[in-house]
Every structure is written in structure tokens, then in C-alpha cells.
Image: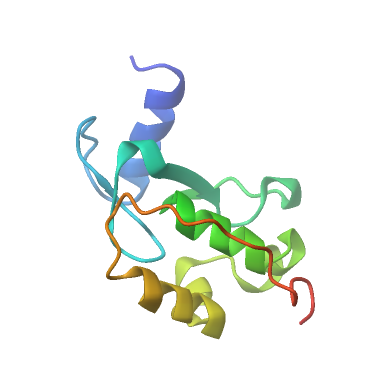
Length: 118
């Protein structure tokens, strides 16, 4: 029986309907590109502080961008699915920009001035 992190990875992979492979690259739920193991972050769709338990894997750059743009309250109320995140204009612009970058690209991220202003 698998323990700890491997068990959580197996559960996340089976939740998405994919068989678990330890050496397979995950696909980012936001930009839909493959994620190298060194830049893979688990993102709670509803923040843990708001009772969230479901996670998806994101590139570290995508994950940082999501948290730079939105507060935990905004994520819980309005952006609790990858589809809702992709529909936001600033996220869509980021995805379009990052699409042609290499999968190991990890740019610096600055907090949005409009964070928390809906």
C-alpha cells in the first residue's frame, strides 16, 4: 500500500480518471501544458482555509499567477473550477502569453494591483 505523497498523487490521478504512473508528466489544469516534476504545484480549487479538499496540478508559474490575481475569498466564491479561472480575462491573457514558453519556464510574478477588488 502506498503511503503519504504517493498515495495522494494516486488518489488525484484516479480522481481525474487517469491511471497513476510515477514517471508520467502531469498536465496543467490551467494552461493544459505538461508540467515538469520540479515545477508541479498542487492547487486547492477551493482554498483549504475555506474547506477545500479537491486539488489539481498546475505549473508553478500558473499557480503563482492565480494567487497573485485573486484572494482566497474570490477563489472560493467565483473561481473554484479550472474553467472559471480560464474564463477570467487576465488569466486568459496570461495563458495566451505562456503557451509558447518552454514547460520549465518560471517567470517572476508580481501581485496584481486590483487583487481583491471585484
